Length: 345
Image 1 (spheres, rainbow, N blue to C red):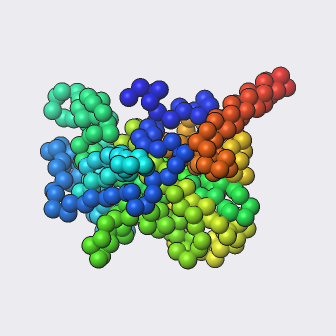
Image 2 (tube, rainbow, N blue to C red):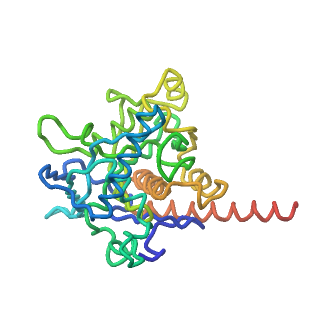
Image 3 (cartoon, rainbow, N blue to C red):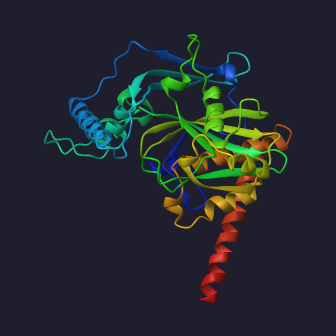
């Protein structure tokens, strides 16, 4: 993949490939088909198996010593994500195929993509398995994470919500601005006990509940806008837009003051007027722009803006042009501010 393939906004070139969706129309819940094969044993290369055993031993020792440790939990590996269309109206359809994996599988692969293999070849997991072809078709063991990412807007006062990840969260994205809420698809939470199919929409509602205290009884307009792939860390993501129809910023902050299930995952929130100009200003105006954002968050919020603009035009897909125009205006304002700062120094 060249940089032209990844999402770019203003001067920010991200590592996120928008694999499906442009924000102009949602993928309806009934058109999302998640297939899960519990009998498939995830194949790991021998060296990755060794790395996994090392992680398991290290974390067990930390736990025994009473130190902070990373606990294992059952999750899924992504075998494939396949966009399709309905026969007559050509509405978007998505097929996902999942197999068993766990968090230590994820740590052994994703955190070691650029670690040299000890076979004398000088190769890495990235060079051997990802750089040789389409990363969207990589083997399942490299895709032990599927994130459900939500861009949430308050309804009455129309504000987009940005969350900044806490330093207490494990991973490469600490202290970076991210989606309003996100959760990794997990067997313990998202595999229905009645044997029915996994629902990405239900996982998105879980993310809103655990990270924003938006309860299942709250009135939420939820749409799946597409799928992305973080090419740097090789992590799949579903992109959702959620409008909290009856909740304002004050309502949420008042609720949060009484407790959030996963408060520790975020260190700050920003409520930004949900206009394309204001959101573009916020995205592009963060200090140290290249490291300010998680790889796919800017793409998520862009798609949410496009969907909002399309609806404002009564469903006209050309609404995406309004967002592109706002991006150009934000770049112009940023350039003017930088020129003024230079002139005044």
